[in-house]
Image (cartoon, rainbow, N blue to C red; front, side):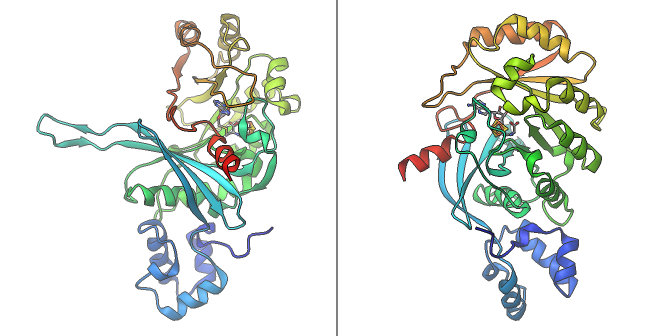
Amino acid sequence: MSILKPSLLDFTQKELMEQIKPSFRVKQIFGWLYHQYAQDFDEMKNIPKALKEELAQKFIVNPMKIIRKEISSDGTIKYLFELQDGKTVEAVWLKMKDEQRDENDELIQEAKYTICVSTQVGCKVGCSFCLTAKGGFTRDLTAGEIVAQVVNLKRDNDHKHNRKINIVYMGMGEPLDNLTNLAKAIEIFQEEDGLAISGKRQTVSTSGLSSKIDKLGEMDLGVHIAISLHAVDDELRTELIPMNKAHNINSIIEAVKRFPIDTRKRVMFEYLVIKNKNDDLASAKKLVKLLSGIKAKVNLIFFNPYPGTTYERPSRADMIAFQEYLTNHGLLCTIRDSKGIDISAACGQLKEKTEGEL
Ligand code: SAH
Ligand code: SF4
């Protein structure tokens, strides 16, 4: 089913100005969308009724609604959204840093948050460890549906438009498989009169479509990339990520070397650690070799099991030994905190749970 009406969130300010006159109204509407987080035309108080009625013929405001929410004790909130055609996707509100107060209880620094967004309903890549892959691919999200996840989460958490937020494209779907809409969303997020989230605050995570990494680089949007590497040899990587056959490790490393990166920054390599698969020090050694010559940062992720998977979570001791090996050999490496471990934290798990209950 196609989306019946586009959302106002699908467009850059310039594009809206081509469709809506006079253009100062577009500035006002932008304020309603991105500063007030309006859900529908009724909320747009200073827009004339006639214009609102005209707009409502062509556009909708918010293309999705929250249908489920799980709140973790660590501040992580996982959302399930229903789209216009009834399909569902997830987004996650992650608390990265607690607020800081001095001895007089005065606020020194506000808490820091990151939003993890989805780019597709399902995914074509079919990784063997990923729950999203199990349901196959349904459709790409529109730019507006990507943008709306951030607008809705900021609204739901009462997060002012000018408070800083980071975006990671690490929810459901392969962002580079929906490059046109992804690039449009990145651009809309950057709008000065909108959310003004710079490329530096946006990280695209990819399973490694190397040709699309080049395309994203050519677009020069100023975003960071994170590569879901997960394995150091092609045999295991192909078992985990079938499309590694077409885009092997070497082609990804070459594409990363060509990617325009802020000289002060590093490329993040995500390494999902699965017990007895890739958690040994021989793999760590190969990883050091593979990434030599790249300004890299490795993020080790505990595999998060779900019912029906044969893969297992690695032990903390093996994880730490792996990290120590990398650090001792000069690679910057963090272990990703399992945020929201008490809720359905990994990609696709809340959706799966909800559909199981329906
Ligand atoms: N498709 C993109 C972005 C979405 S997946 C990609 O693959 O990079 C985001 C991250 O979640 C990836 O690094 C993926 O490997 C990880 N992931 C998927 N299933 C997981 C699981 N069961 N436990 C832990 N991480 C998982
Ligand atoms: Fe798709 Fe990423 Fe899941 Fe692989 S890990 S199936 S690329 S969402």
